[in-house]
Length: 114
Length: 114
Image (cartoon, one colour):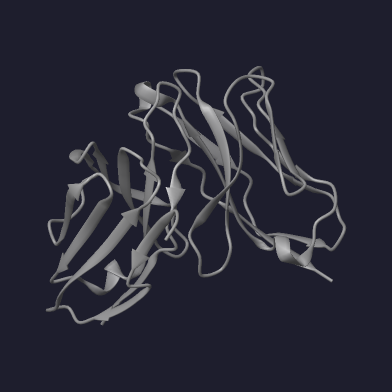
């Protein structure tokens, strides 16, 4: 595997289910990110992890719970979601630097909440 | 704070037409600038980047020049193809000053017709 991978690619869940999204980066980067992309809305940054430590949580509801066990893996645990949480969830990674580096994105998980 | 402004879409062009997508930015530091492309059903892919004033990023026939005096990073292509149909995002990162995060524009959808 190369780059950033995400599983599953598609997920349908009920409002009472618990599921997890997985992201893995094979680039040796030290920062990872979760984004939410909804139709007709700008890309929303949800969480930032630097060296496995969470450094940003952009007022994300507690029904979304991130986990970063090491610098290569990032999870997003989901529970009691709402239909408005249906969206494309994108994971990204980067190498932190003074001038800022590009982020590399995975293909996303298309989530549908019924 | 940082911000990126892109022209509203959708932009509809005939094949072989000239493309310009405008992007202007506001940043407190000296950012790096990026263009990302998102094809239907996929994640974001880095298209090109520029890290300092007057740099020109280029890839796959697309070009953009970092203009500090006008705080702009317009995307251009001399002859578009149907396969260029996608959503294009302008973004900036100002490194440590911005927490190594990316600030995205809202995206511009490009449709290329035969």
